[in-house]
Length: 334
Image (cartoon, rainbow, N blue to C red; front, side, top):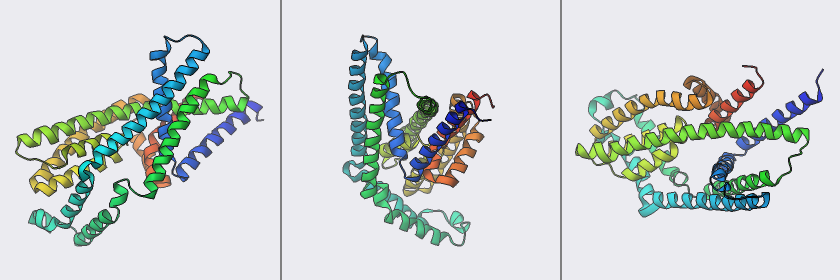
């Protein structure tokens, strides 16, 4: 017979799952990540400055000030990165260069490679060029959808800040369902924090070695790739997305290398394959160590989530997997 405690616990799981489905279904993942990230940063900053503040009122005021500073810093960072990416039209020029490289592939690729391409290679190439040109505004984060996404992110950050402040001001006594929901959200937050920290480490390592390659090794060999700093920045940003981020940055670097010479493209491909073969084990060690999971477990979760929810599912898959696994362990089921 189901007890009231079991009914409350089951209801909390169902409500949390429904919330995640709503977020994925209405494309609110940016707002979720922004809100949780702001909440995490405020929590990390509180112990550093809170030791000098006494009393509940003082701590509440300090948290409110921290929330304002964190949100302002995040917005400022976003505007700074956007200004760098679009400064002098460099990002636009990079997309145009990639499109031109694909368009003129017959004149750049060696004959032996062209001879081994599928018979429908030109058609595939034409479609790729058409897609790049048609979707350049989306790639440059312009237009109505990008504006809505930016608004969602800002709102998410504000919500995360308000939750951090409210958490300190809220009374300790809560009803059973509220306590159960907070437990679910705390477990989700812990999973997000572990995955984000692990992925940030990997993205930093990836961007560092990519920078050494583009700005150090290639120039030493007499090869100078255009848009080098922009590609390093893109590598650092998209590297926060497991697996798919590497595919995006690698494709950009190889195509820009191809615009210089087939040798530069081949060397870039060799370097990136070697780097990410090493990062596969690094990923398994860092991410797997944080959430106690093997790399193949995370990959399976990503494939399933991508099939169900598309790109948003890929981005959220490691967090969801870590959260579910933590809940199962807490229930002593695994």
